[in-house]
Image (cartoon, rainbow, N blue to C red; front, side, top):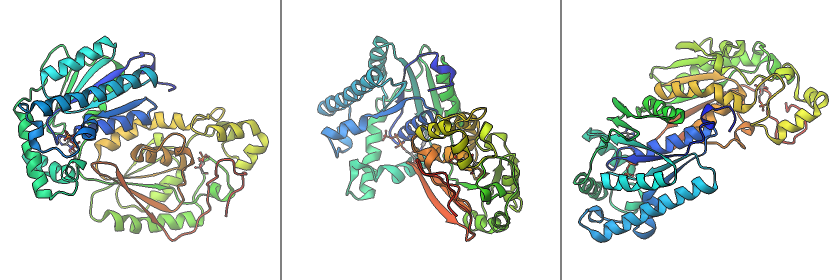
Length: 426
Ligand code: ATP
Ligand code: F6P
């Protein structure tokens, strides 16, 4: 897991989601898992609804009535199965942050989970999402609940009505968290107010900070590599070269390409400190910010060499990088893992912002893309990200939509497959 101070803490945290249905709990839980996984912290979500569906696939609202004893029994059973699997995962798969995604709306249910955690020395941390914005709740129901597997094949209007009745049944017994001795974060109306209590470990504070930066306003993120550079033409890596003639052409065409996709939305452009990204963004008529953290992966002693030169001068290094590209650190330079660590503030800021365009470099773009698209560390350093291509990412309730927009300007390929000989394809 390299390089994080919370490793030393050796903690295991059970995050217990709390809140009425359609308050974004699953969305929040999945985002935390994606964020922590990207940072190499073993995290997993255990969704009690999925366990409940094994026995009761299409329940009506009555199933969730507290006076329905059979419903109560089946729901408790589902929670038990999820918790059992979570503890197994803590024990056998070195789990660090397990998230129990359920409503957990009563004190008695929470006390029962607390007991189980304490017996196992797992730190309990509650995340409650509280929301009384009726329009937003209705929107959530229409957006994600009517298409839930619970209502498959049903009329959306009827599904929405039933879901509202389900919420009513939960409301009858809902007790918000107020216990002063518990570790919790309460997000009120999508973070317009955040209450935090007894946050202890560094890892918990990272999770809280992440949650405080999330918003759910619709927005997009555009990514592009810089235009083809002089180094790209000769196959050299790193450096701070200027754009090639074709790279300059991409820079000239970029405003039109961006405008077609962005329309009249406000946009801010982020570049690295290297000339090639700034030259690429030069004609974009938007506010621009420069980030050192967006500079290309530092190739250390290999900076300025071609892959072929690296292969012949440092064959062991060349082979080691192919063996584990994510972990391999160039002598005097960086690994993909190092890049992810320095990109963490960028990701945090991206979560806070709305429409952003990032003009950066191959390795950096792969790492940012991996965060949004949940790409594993095995795969992300090997992803193909061609030059002269604009990538539009649109975060949705579950997952991010991607569109690739290719400019009609040829460029060399800087891509080298794993195990491939070190020749650049023209
Ligand atoms: P259930 O208990 O039925 O599983 P849930 O609370 O897990 O419901 P989600 O399925 O995550 O709810 O709901 C997703 C919707 O909630 C999305 O449309 C998302 O935009 C919205 N959402 C995200 N965060 C919040 C929040 N803090 N408050 C209210 N809604 C939110
Ligand atoms: O070749 C372009 C480039 O941005 C180099 O500057 C950088 O070293 C390389 O790509 C990163 O890609 P990879 O990790 O596949 O070598």
